[in-house]
Length: 516
Image (tube, rainbow, N blue to C red; front, side):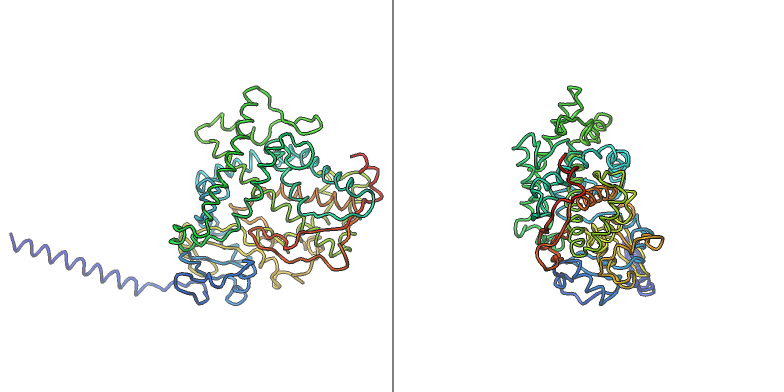
């Protein structure tokens, strides 16, 4: 009996020994993996010591030195930095599903309902359903057209205010605030049928609360949280970033839930209309659309899902559009010849009446101006980060599972190998057949499954506002110096100095403006 046990023991020992030898030999004989080039790193920090603000410029310096496919380590998190169309195509087309996840970072947890909102949800059935809701129920072409009256009303309101402030002479206006208020009124008009800036604000206290929340969100979104990259620092919550996010998320959710409950009560009374100012009514806000879905599938379309969709619309559809308008006007003021050419196109195609959304298709040069603005100043210069769900090959390099992907759209848009005179403002580069947007050469809204579903809406808002301002007023710089085009810090690349401009009503539009 004892001998049998000893034999079994030695047999198991020999099996373990040969298993160990097999494992070692397999590793030694395996073809070594080809990893992307990487700069020297530090223990614990990795490459964080090389990163400075603004982030897209700092990463461009690294890419110029080490190549368009670069392996980095932010603390304990592996990062793949992409700075060319071909490598972006590998990630966002060929390996689109593999890179369709979002990294787990604090903002997604605390401000995106524990990664359940559309912008931060992992790729899977839940995200696919949210994407379907966004593209079919909320941001489809028909739905966007349905709310054209909201956008036109808000643009006309901005023009009316500027006209009244001008007193028919030259005046100075700070446009950053005006554009921000415009986009928030547009989005909340679509979402809830309400205005929170300007005239016809029904509930002043509600408007005050909304404005306070709006001011805080970009601040917490742009805060550095080292806990995302060095986990033990996350437990300590250095600087109180997480506490601020938790507090802000609570304030925001209380506000949004009150809006949803208000619409629910209205629906129960069979009154689907909402005030739009001047006695006008509009049927079915986006909250109403989502409450209709909730009635059919209450177990899935919870209030949290609805709040997440509203929060995503406000985050992605307001600051981004207003900043694009501000950059575009800054560029036009620095290039009066382009401004005159755009004005001539509007005079020819629209004439002495206010621009309508249906006119935008007849204004190709205005479209070129918007494309060139998005090329030079993409408001998401690094896009939103992706994360790989399995090992993949990018540009011939092995990329491990769980790698965070950063696509430097700003670097691609200014690459001298891709663009002639890449840092010059030349809208004409998008004219004619040669101006066709090559895939992944211009990617301000991302690409693939995780591309921004609201791109069509954003272009409409920017086109309508920019075109109407060019049509209705004559614009000049404040003083002799060119507009300062220095970039500020933040996830959405604001201007360092808010834009101020001199304007006066266009003589050909005086009759129209006086009737607003």
